[in-house]
Length: 138
Image (cartoon, rainbow, N blue to C red; front, side, top):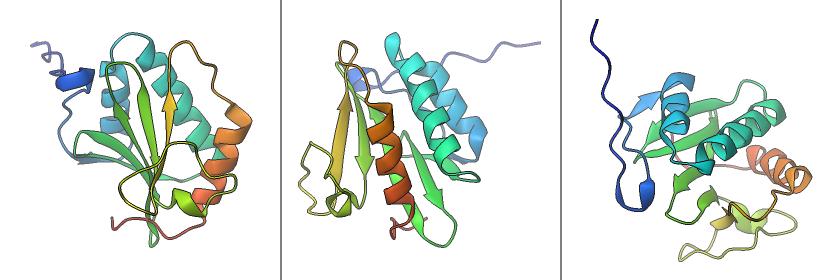
């Protein structure tokens, strides 16, 4: 039996995971997130899955994506050296609007840092709102 090699970490510590659809590639990405980010990734995934039963998952462009069949992707996750970036693809339509701006007018971000607690109630509310909006093409 051959052990699988550990996924390569790209700049900023973002795991390089092959493109794939379903829960397995997302779980592989989360497991490969370095340090504290892996546990935070597991928690984010659990919150998203609980808020949106039957959510579609994939890894594309080295980022986990979450979406609704027929509506598109509503959320993506990406690892950076000092934080995890959660992208709400139609975030400008959420209330309240997530705090971080984007060069793309509709996109808003939430940055999750090791030393700052996640407001799980607010995050779950954003996920619920985002899942009801049109998303990015699947």
